[in-house]
Image (tube, rainbow, N blue to C red; front, side):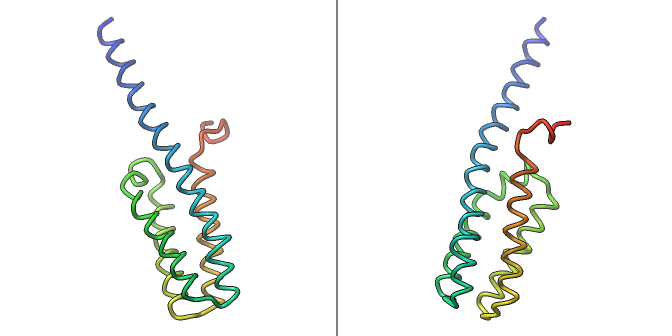
Length: 127
């Protein structure tokens, strides 16, 4: 009986911490998705390179602030893809390469959406 209680407490702690993290990650990823789509990409299209770089640096700093938590709970391959995409997009924006920047930002946007949808607590993700 004692081991059952300990197991239930341990499971509750694990699920609770995972639930708290997913709430944080959900909010953070949604903010990054919106920033990439509604700020960075718009600024690049309008050739506002300074504003697009600042907005993309916000996304980058937001990503790296949560990286330790992401690496515990989220898919490592997706994390690597997003980090690579952020680096490339920053380089393209700094070099003012519009076509490459937009392509990489579209890929980054897609990867963030994929990560968010793939990690949500849905029946299709559990089964």
